[in-house]
Length: 180
Ligand code: ADP
Image 1 (cartoon, rainbow, N blue to C red):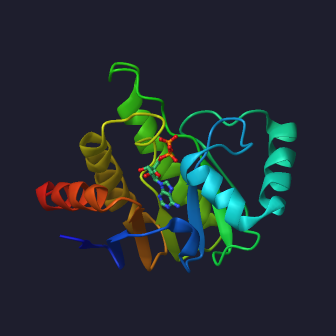
Image 2 (cartoon, rainbow, N blue to C red):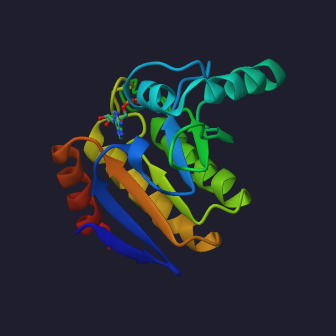
């Protein structure tokens, strides 16, 4: 299963590269420094160009490092999206360090920040399941249940989860089938 209605909006799972998505906002799985890194973060800054990092620097100089689970927004430089929402997912530490709640916060706060900026289409990567090591089936259940619960609270048309790896799409789609 790759689609589910949530209020007036649709939740859709796709395989692909988040930097090519023509949506109002894409979400970046950033780190607290907001200074870029590997994985999806590196790809977003590489394709989007230097203006995104300049805005990130300004945010960090005003507010300090971004705490885990929180989200901030910048413009999207050369990306086809209008905005980039930067969030920090939890580093997996075995499951007893509040990782589940922090991952849910990252999805919830990213969606809120995008909706506050009148975004109607938002694309997420699989937050925390790369370098941060969060087990993907567990992360998928949290991502999907959080987004399905939060979407009806905002004025949205579509939330897309963009899975880079075909296997990850299968895991997310199985998780979506298992959510009642
Ligand atoms: P984290 O540090 O939060 O774990 P990573 O960027 O290491 O973030 O990985 C998060 C997910 O992003 C991984 O599943 C990885 O396959 C995926 N990813 C990497 N590049 C892209 C991209 N261009 N578009 C979408 N997803 C991507």
